[in-house]
Length: 211
Image (cartoon, rainbow, N blue to C red; front, side, top):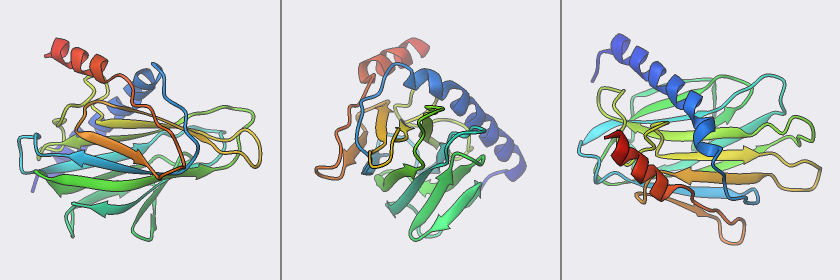
């Protein structure tokens, strides 16, 4: 499907650039939410290509509380995709990411319809470091490098999520997110959390300027 060596290098470079810029994108602010399951839907009809890749990763740092992001219930994805991954734990129906280990999930998909998955965060309380873990979702063309969709021109991300762990026992962590275009829909489980999309107009304006 692609030149494995060349595209692997390109993909790793793209992932590195995404992680490096993600903190800046989320620094503009995120709406708080109680912990819960988030259902994410990506409409790929406007991507302009029939196939490519979806990339997901969870930021890591040393000496912070252990936090996880779990992705399950994939819908609209290929039944037997090409998968390139590291630092992940297989769970029923999906994958678990940890902020203690460098990680990435890169898998082939057929574009043109709806892709969806559930995303859940969990972890230890963190009254000291206040480290915010970031989970980012991007889409790339068949070369494994060219970003697709109405992505953030700074990070290349279609959607980015920020997880702030609970400070004390018995309380919930907080979820914030930013999406780069209306073709990405984020829906929390009913009654569990309130989410605020940020920067839609700013992302669109920045992309037009970048173009």
